[in-house]
Length: 62
Image 1: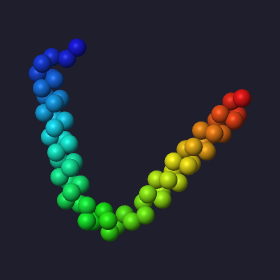
Image 2 (image 1 turned 30 degrees about the horizontal axis):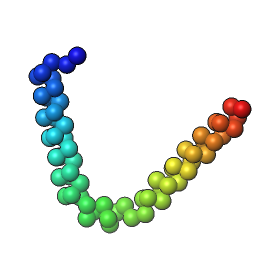
Image 3 (image 1 turned 90 degrees about the horizontal axis):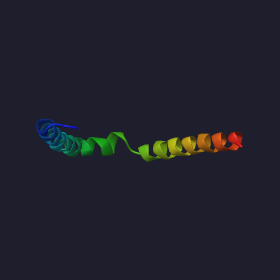
Image 4 (image 1 turned 180 degrees about the horizontal axis):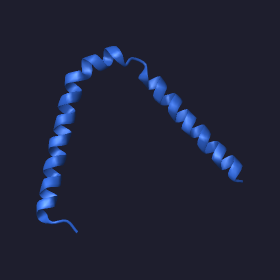
């Protein structure tokens, strides 16, 4: 399906990408604590909204 070169490239890309994301997150972690306080409330509200839409879909399907 994939050549050996493509698999090696994918593995190297994945490792590099994850490393860069971890570095960027750690670098900005202090700023996230200051500017994004309470963002979990938005996530919870969004998940509840999706759950309500799913319940409506099931209710009207039957």
